[in-house]
Image (cartoon, rainbow, N blue to C red; front, side, top):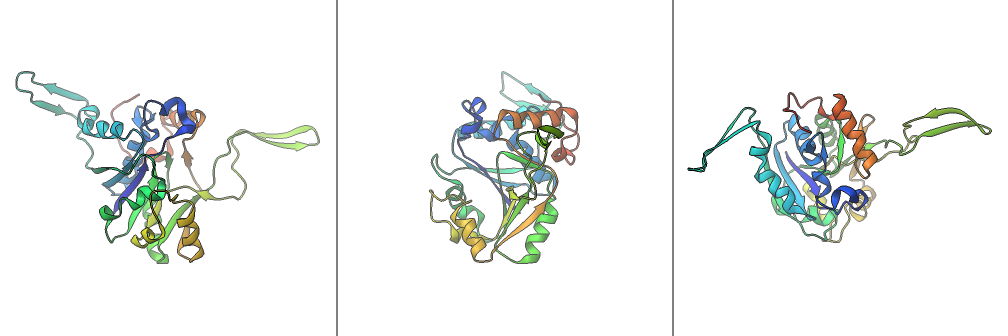
Length: 264
């Protein structure tokens, strides 16, 4: 199944990192977030990727053009002939289509620009700044079972601040990382039928506004509940959460990756 990754936003809330590279290229454990996302989809058998580029898209293009050399532990170069030989771990078996979808396009507009690439088939989509351990096989099975145009993965977001349970002015209990009540939010990791394109008007369309609202109004949007790990990266604090999980060897999204060469 084709997988679309939206990777063209400005990432202004993470300006400390995104002044020099697009947010999907911010690294966790020495690997870009985008690489973690593609690696996760690969673990479920998905290897055909369409990356919607915008802000600093050339950085993403350069990375994957050089990926074979960057990801291989040993490289031999014959300076006279120009021959290059790589040894060790082979590169991933991915086909990555890097498509410029416009600097100012919104999320819906970026998706609409990929319509001719997707064709008349079911496809998956996610954002280029969030990691999760959602069961993608179960997500696809859920989508096929309900027969609607769209499925969104619903997640419970981690709170940004520690929680306090008070008894008068006394702190009864302090919780370092509480989960926000019973609320659910859009966690990305969509499955769409091509009919979704008919809900998008143009470059200025935010996928999260009129298209998803109207799909819900028409009874064409279903939620796949994921009550386990999910984390987006909007701040340095959130980036450090992912980095610490990776370095501890307890990154929930990486359980399926297998053995990797050390990075970072």
